[in-house]
Amino acid sequence: MPVPDQDSAPFWEGCREHRLRIQKCASCGTLRFPARRHCAACGSDESTWADVSGKGTVYSWIVVNHPVPREVFAAEVPYVVALVNLEEGVRMPTNIVGIPPDQVKADMPVEVLFAEVDGVVLPKFRPRAE
Figure 1 (cartoon, helix red, strand yellow):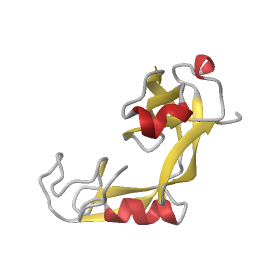
Figure 2 (cartoon, helix red, strand yellow):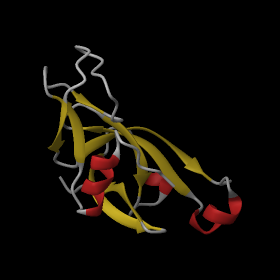
Figure 3 (spheres, one colour):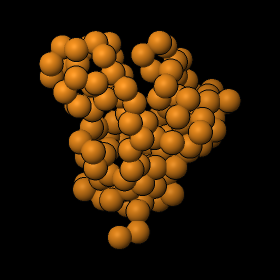
Figure 4 (cartoon, helix red, strand yellow):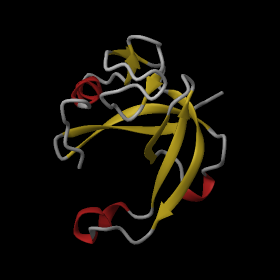
């Protein structure tokens, strides 16, 4: 399970509020995920947070059949771990839910939903109706 730190705390606060928030450079406007202290584009250490649409497309994925640790995730298999390209231009790792794993496709439109797991609210993605 994720452990929020100083840089990522606003992201996890947004998830608890069912809002997908991405860090934004206050100097040049570049969005960055995961959150970090300095902008890779301009080097600034000033940032804000932007609510994003929660819409994107599947970039890549794997289907997990043998989870680690087994005792935690055994009931979930098979499940999809994916990289999703958000419309705003950042890519984030996540899970694809609401569809059989063998039906996940490249460039499939998806949208965020929020799921509470062991007291943490996680952003997951499901197929989006076009």
